[in-house]
Image 1 (cartoon, helix red, strand yellow):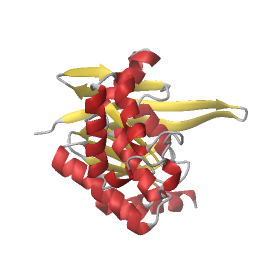
Image 2 (cartoon, rainbow, N blue to C red):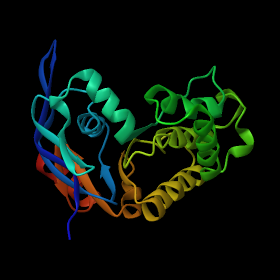
Image 3 (cartoon, rainbow, N blue to C red):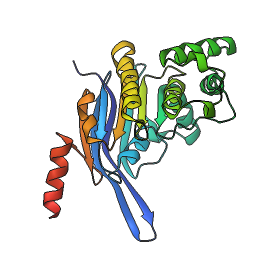
Image 4 (cartoon, one colour):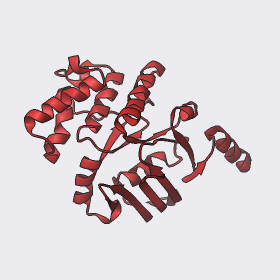
Length: 245
């Protein structure tokens, strides 16, 4: 039976610029099921990051609604205050960035315990224990007391994933998490994501510009000019090119 976790209903986003209004998203409708590893594939400027920012509530939408079903209740995240939305996101949604965004002055274990301490999710002793468990998950426990500058980019990305899992959120959203990594390291990141979906029943939404990754997801969609479409990314983008010609 379908088990919807996230619903986007007619979500649109328009930015006002000096050159006029720019429509980044056009009435996007999407249902994400619990336990999906959903890939959203599109070229640069297609609206991928904007779509993620609508889902995680970082940016305000122009029209429409984003609803998350969790703990037996439905939450319209854009109807919450900014502070309430930030608190909700800290507990219910982990965010993985392409640029890692680790704090350079904190050790790896401190980077991971920080979200737990800020949300008061765990006793300080337990937060360190959990941080070590997460470092073990991404196979970096031996580097726990190093600063981010002393590990590789691929290792930093794995720490960023561990940090996103700190408060055990049911949802992860990942913005081009493998875009700056070599193919071997990117495969390792995918292995971690697949483990989280298959073994821990996490729901992951990942955006990427790499059309070759579509087969790695349990479901993939294409975004083109702010519109979300089903089907093979290569085919959809080819149709768009032909229309423009």
